[in-house]
Image (cartoon, rainbow, N blue to C red; front, side):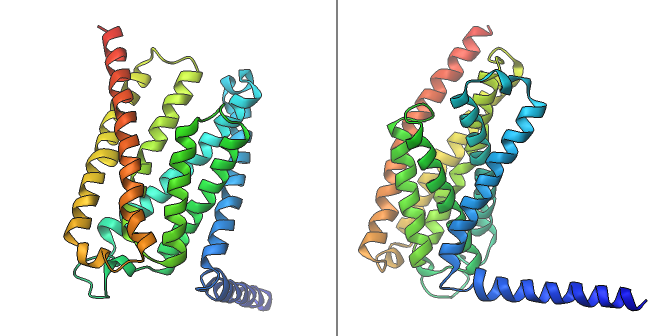
Amino acid sequence: MAVSKQAVMAIKSYQNQAHVWVNHYLLADPFIPYTSILAGIFAFKMIYDVTQLISTFYFKTYSTLTKVQRMEWNNRGISTVHAMFIAALALYFVFWSDLFSDKNHLGPLTFRNSHLSTFGLGVSVGYFLSDIAMILWLYPSIGGIEYVIHHSLSGIAVAYAMFTGEGQLYTYMVLISEVTTPEINMRWYLDISGMKRSGAYLLNGIVIFFTWLVARILLFVYMFYHVYLHMEQVNRMHIFGFLLVFVVPAVLGVMNLMWFGKILRGLRKTLAKRQ
């Protein structure tokens, strides 16, 4: 019994130490941006390695790929996990959390932030840094100039919102668009696995069409409408943050429309082949 009590006390001691460390270091205001970026980079390196390990043992296609293709395969595993993480967090903050609610009178919503919202953006910055480094290293094998532009603009906007605390609501609105990433990655996996004629490939194309339409077209329209309704609060932002609220979503919106055109043409071709 004495050993059991000692064990319980030891566990509680470790829990208290962990709690103190998290609150006084990991989630301490001065350290959140830096620890979250490092946490993001470290987590995604682990995901890369785990994806490689699992794929080697459970996916026959993986062993037939070239070195660059295997690296892209692993890298898409990272982007899928990041997309699920940040999209879930973004949906929470935009639609369910009281942090950015108009009913919550905590000052202008353009300046509202929390430890969790800042930490989440930092993890995303860690991802963008890791991914753009991979793209540039293997350029243009796993992504052309459009991916460099997209990741650079996204990374700058997310980093600004994280370090300054400004415009985090609109940053998370844009990040909801990451819900389309797992579907895009799945399409690549199906394609490279020789499943372009499968029902799964067709279903994937339909899902991409609708999720892209909602998350990357209609949601951007909603974001600009929200900015219009809260223009007085947006005007209080620093000039750089003010420009980011308009310029980055506008550029990304145009790119989304261009990609949506390609998605639509691709879906039409797929459906035509099945008739």
